[in-house]
Length: 177
Length: 182
Image (cartoon, rainbow over all chains, first blue to last red; front, top):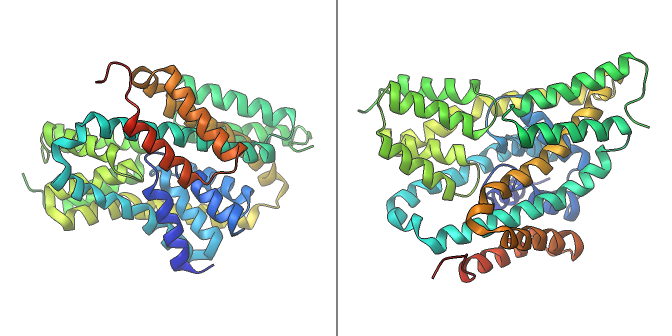
């Protein structure tokens, strides 16, 4: 895939999102659904791998870029992750007190709430791909409860899930049907 | 107080690449270092960078680093802070991904990957829930349900593009006042 186009698609997604994984629905739409540049599983892998190391949640863009166009794609993903950050300088200079204006706050809240809906929409095909056996459904349920009810770092949840899979495999039981 | 370049870069490298858990723990660690220990930023400057980072599109913690870096060492500081916080972690992510691709057909790796992917899909659900939860009090249950459920239905059910869904939500948010607003 053309690296410049990849950068523009990824930066479009980051410019339209305000937190965590909320750029993911746009990336899924552009790269998985429309262009077929990566699969649902690769997108899922990107999120998983990015959470295994330190750094911001947006690092999954680097993995998405790598899947789509190798190392140049990873660089494009990294640049797309960084680019919107510099808008804060313009905000500091020009927005100032208006940032607290209730219409601005209300608009951002509405966009974040819609992003949550889009995130749910993106989760459905990924869940269909991943929740394929009783073990994976139970792992997912426990992961969800732990993430919502506790402050445990996501890296421990992912490591815990990996250990469950390894123990299941060591017992000679299949993780997938 | 203007920090020297070596200390400044070292701090962002250390905190950004050794703190697990995403943006919030990283910003908490930076607050302790920048405001309480080093006194390179005042509490007010930290508050300004923190609140504007929430309004900046993209990854909040990178916006915070750009803002804090700009306050301490102008434009060069913003670039260095963002690069220091993200470039080493990005390289590690690529290395982990390349290692995964090399071993993904291995039975042991495949078993671990099966449950990891199940957990990641749950993480996305949790992420959606955690996006909605803090806004319930300000926006109200009905508004949250309508905007989140409406976006889900518009995208998954009706096939509207995410871009259009977000634009519609922004318009709703701008014109549709919340409880108690005049």
